[in-house]
Image: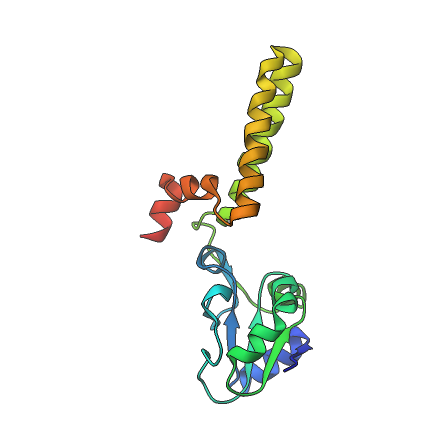
Length: 172
């Protein structure tokens, strides 16, 4: 099965005609910013024929990369005609179409992981250069954690960050 991409303007026209818009990003991403009226069904929850609505189904992510990379899975999830919104939420916003932004929601977990991992790695390198070479272990530990996360699919830092007070308040 193939799935075509359409522009945000064409997607808006189809939505106005009754098409269903599905946001395949994670709940934390959807809570922060979303296209009004989009249903949130994360990619890992989409199986064959899980979007059981009749009619046209449109899928989007943030930039279009996730939808393009998983187009076969998205096509199989839809019971009818399906399309990918080209460029995702970023292109939708750039086209001047409305989004709902909730700045009270924390930024998505993986961006938080990138900020913390990058900060700890930089801190370890700076401390190793200015204080003592043993601080390189901090950078090495962060690198090992990221390697483990990539190889196993389990990110311990993300699990810790999900329990942080600002993330717990957002999910309750």
